[in-house]
Length: 221
Image (cartoon, rainbow, N blue to C red; front, top):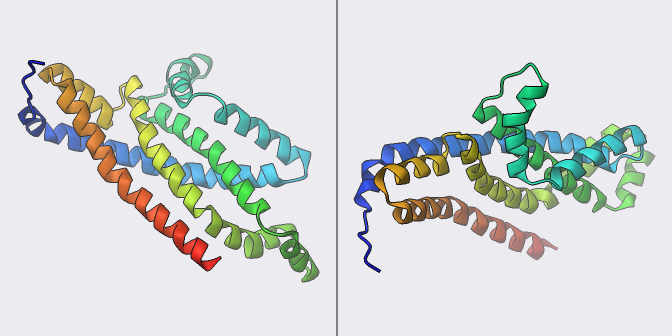
């Protein structure tokens, strides 16, 4: 194949890639913090035996876990402003889509982590006169969160990769900047290869940390 490789244009436009990378990391951080925070609330609702908490939490999880993130992002960007008086910019739409999806998956992680604690722990707390919220705060969550950490880290990895979907609504993250550069410089192979390597350089060390943590947890029994 007669192709003239042009990596020099990537160096020439590295400032645009750095801006895109900053936007990507910022979007991922905001959505991860919000998603894990709201996920705890929804997850506790999913574990609750009270139908007033259980059913709204379940409906939320099933909707946002079983619809594509791309559809959610585009719905918030294009459809939500039509049925509401609010204007939604690209960052807000991407944040809503990614946060709500992360919330749904995080809620299931919280629920599974809470269910992994034996009933004896609950009974011990109840015997000490603790309320449900005190048992959850002092006994159950501190133990279960340690078991959830690998799943949360894997979720962070997935979220980092999903930020590239925000490029479809012209949010200036890494993928969108790469698309603009490749259109101007006519170097899609070099550009998208570089973006893939950047994501790999960020995500691969996290996967190693996850594996090391899981090995340590298994060694502790």
